[in-house]
Figure: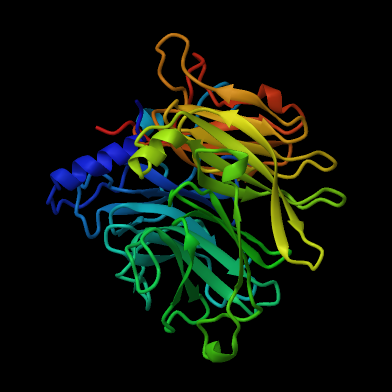
Length: 469
């Protein structure tokens, strides 16, 4: 039987919590669970680079201070120099090329979302990153410099309390209108107790108005299935979310958002989001939805969602009335996002594509004009990375283990991922939760079957960061 490694680690921490108040290190990653990219004015040290990597380290074993033991670092990824065949990712020995001093936040920190002029038109302040802490149940805000740097937040609303009745805030997603009339940030919770007429395992969201963080958030329920991931479609002004185990269901939540923010000064006149819930369980029995990404909009092509799912034993789950602690498979669900005859949102599973155990986050690569999407998903339990091509409807490349050592080439427990658009190629940064390193998958857009990790002269995968001591 297999378990997700972080669940085992969480259980061990709960049984014997480390009470250390040791400050966290600011020179390497430890249990990275959040990745984002931010533009760098003037470019990076390596010619052609114009992005900095924002990396959240979770302090998942509570080795460091619980209240401020996670970190957010900005680093220059320093591309591999193909002409000379030498490595320039990080520095010799794995030390990082940091941009700014970095910052600390509450432990069990997870995904990070970046709010800037691109993702949120009209946002008054400069770029900022938002991360939630499952340990402190707070939302943290960090300003991002034009040079990609991160420093501790010193202004107002650096730390914002989340609903204390709900547990494990994790997913964060911006949902801003192009006209600037709504600048919302949504936070999802992985667990919830019974609250009023809502049972245990209900999905809840907190909505913040980033233009007025002095206003308290509005927290509201959806339906059974705590939110594990979200994706916003600016074209239709819809927020999509996928739910975790809450009985034998696999909910996809579709929220049609109003043009205003329900937490601003006119909240009494702002309508609530219209919710549609689509149960995808019949398309894949035993599915627990994990991640979601939306297709690139292209003329003449249907809009789709790509949803990763862990697959458990349905019969065993029914017998024990709980989520089994092991998986029997993984999959990508390719879902057509349709509208019914009266224009209401709907969804239909087009295909189910098997992948490895421990299906994780989903990311769509940059658009290929005239061709369907390329999608990347890591499988944490197998230590593999899958590249799915929706043009052919199949996984076309799998990065697995080293032929000599048998170790996962992308590091142990590949988890968080982020994609950089480099024009003729895409770079996929993949965080190893266990090793505290990042690998880089290079995908030639014209020949994706040749995708491979960036390697040194001996053929070994290059890493950003050093292995945990």
